[in-house]
Length: 324
Image (cartoon, rainbow, N blue to C red; front, side, top):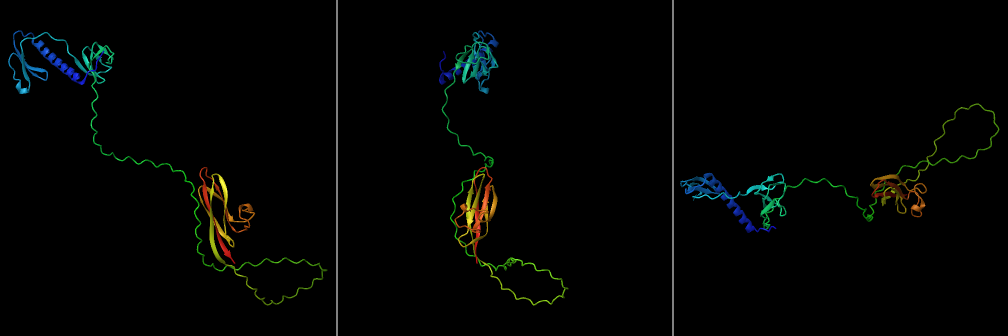
């Protein structure tokens, strides 16, 4: 059963491992020299490496190393650990190979491959467990703002808003100037012919007489009364048409005035089917208009909304005038 290795013990184990490597290095050198017996040997030691080994005192101070000496060599110790870096499933490992895996250090107990170290794997033994997570460092300074991104594509058009409430009727405009005198009216129709008399007996045809002289010119007839426009004004109404629906609208003249013109404004996918003065029984029926409405009392417009979605709007207006 493995026990958690504290951070202090972890560093102690690493220190012992370093000493073991140093002793193995010295042992290899002593083996090369053979059994010294009573002979004293000298060497320079620096960072675990020996140099200038011999029976004379070396100059170790020039390169920052320390002089050591010995006169007896012990038996060669057991083989040390071999550091193999991070464990890999594709590598083979020998006994005493040391690897890092999952933040911990493991030593191979037998030759193996593709056998990941763990507490339950008998191929490996834990050397140093992963240390505790350190404290969170201070938050770094905020980096500079990045460049602005490219402008996005335009969004789809929004739906048509609902029709607003009908506005108040504006004040009546100023009376216009009197128009020019109209042209003389056309001559009246010729009266009906009288009933023919009974045919007389045919007389004998007489000889043709000579052409008579031209008679005097008759007196001029009296002039007819002149007509002229005295005032005019315009009146309008607004209508809303549902999709795929037709609707007839009206603009009425006030009492005493007649429509001499009119028209419409339309908003949406609308088709006009009628735009004309009110003619009772032709383009207008009595149930559609106020009681007593007569021909020319206003203007009428019919529209058809072709849109599949969304209402359409149109305005009917009439130009009304007094005539005397």
